[in-house]
Image (cartoon, rainbow, N blue to C red; front, side):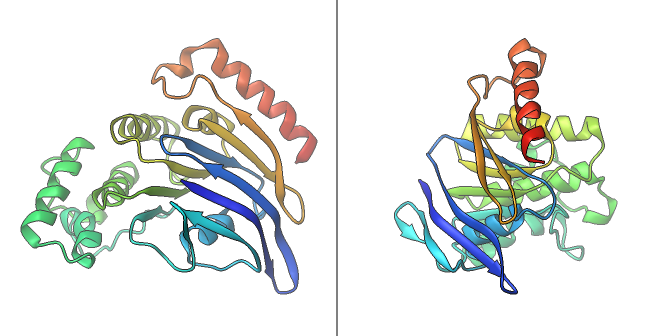
Length: 244
């Protein structure tokens, strides 16, 4: 589905990412862990087509990424909602750009807002929504366009712990229902283990992939209560101690 082959990226004559290679299959999720400034966001921008690499190639469904693609959705840390538009208008924005009729795009936006627990809030503006509610709107907007791939840059990092866990549950439940593959960047080991079928450790200067963990327990909404969940967290933390 997604193939990243030997990608390197330089900023101001400094190599930031070096020889990055991995693949993401359909019905799979990957979470990238790494310290601040190691290039995690840059990697997402390269995959989304917002930036270009000096070497290597990125392909999505055998299409080489050279610019942003309409079927690749990106969720940002700051939600990225337009404050002068209602929730319904924010969710339907991508569909409007795609040329979908107002009737159809509003119907699809209402449906996914309801699925994410925001039914009846269509006419509200982001300013009256909590941080968690705003992120639900951002998730709704991403899924409304029926993407082939979802990219997320620390989408829950600014939220309190309980809201963050609730939205992690929402994201996993949505994935179980849609099977849209996603790539998520985070600093949280616990979040990585709950949301990643595979977990990539990105570290170093220049950054490279240092370790890949398989996560057999991924996909179980009750995974946080299992011993296997905490055992994998412990294993990853031990490995991170070698790189950070």
